[in-house]
Length: 140
Image (tube, rainbow, N blue to C red; front, side):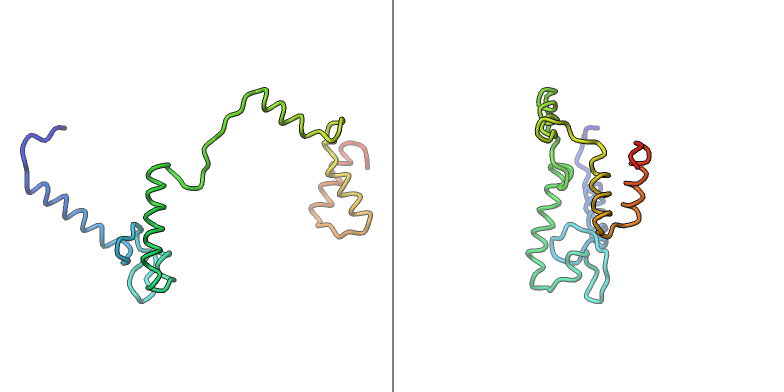
């Protein structure tokens, strides 16, 4: 929708809405986070609430940088997906071989059995898993 005429009251309402949301924000100057903790020294986000007031400026800069990263990339924890060709995937799978022989799919169970027989203390879950696997394969 295109704005055809200047409407000062509309602009004023928008400005007031922005300031009303500020009541929900962290009391640290410039912090982009909403408050989550009221520990007696004002409502603050969890990043500021437990830190010394001298550290607040650096914490605020870090929180602003994180918000910018989230806005720019959607998230800061997820790395971009790297796609590989079929040939590259097959090559990587080939490196899973031990020497010239393929990996034993129940090798983990055999190793756990050896550790158990050697007297190493295994968890109940480890013991049950290797025993079930070896029974299923007819090796126990």
